[in-house]
Image 1 (cartoon, helix red, strand yellow):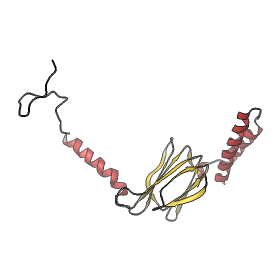
Image 2 (cartoon, helix red, strand yellow):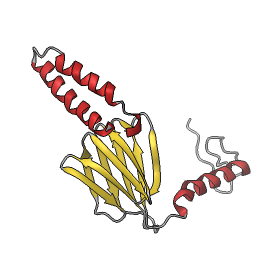
Image 3 (cartoon, helix red, strand yellow):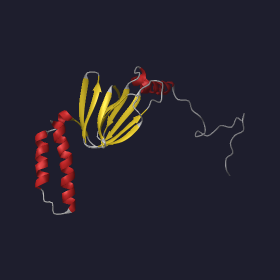
Image 4 (tube, helix red, strand yellow):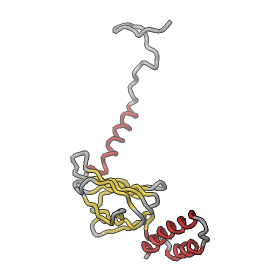
Length: 182
């Protein structure tokens, strides 16, 4: 026979899976601390662009307050600042420039997407998220090695349509790496 739920006020003990347990005081404090820390980064920041630069390999920055970010869109290069209009854009191979005050940092992106959203809280901070396939600081690029790869691509046989397509796409990407490494 199936067990029936105990009546209100009944002294029948409930099975452990139905009993509500309160978290231990230490767990409660840890949960509260986690909630506070989640919002601590943006708590003191007002009216700034919060930038996230991520690839499958790493997160270069997550919600870092910056002045602007310039990206290579498929329709041309453009700059995003706080309070820009909403945008989702596909990015092509090129250089991303992150500006914060007098500082400027450049990253090479193979391709990816930019997602720009308005604030969901009262901070006035918009978010720009760059999701990249490959994202590398331009200082880490090796122009000589890229030139060597380009030479190998151009010298490779182009007997099939696949060989020709591979050479054309590879050459376009490597040329962007060479340009970014200058």
